[in-house]
Length: 137
Image (tube, rainbow, N blue to C red):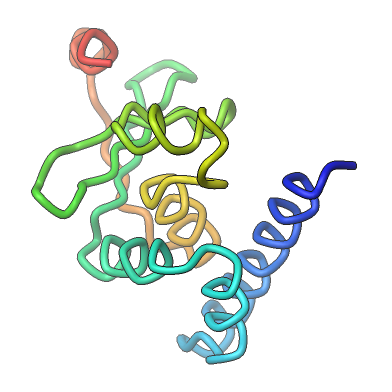
């Protein structure tokens, strides 16, 4: 197992603990946030800001099993995310994550936190609307 994989597994574990604590107490213990921050740095603050602004959305296709996540960036731009493949179409993912400079982008981190805490907004869209969303990626 690589160092990178160990760090990613640790981040996933901390996020699961955050979700458990948030669902039980509607609060996230400081030590968990410090743990995340020690691995990911300022991305944690940016991701939490997105979650606080309810910027994580799940679009479900009506009558079908397709779904897509959209995460609003700080400037209002919506980035599309495929959770199963851990892909985000933001520039940071392309230039930082794929090049190995960062473990994860703030949008993927915000998605993981929102999903763990069950704070993701969900909307149902038509097949045509889903096609339009997918064309923009």
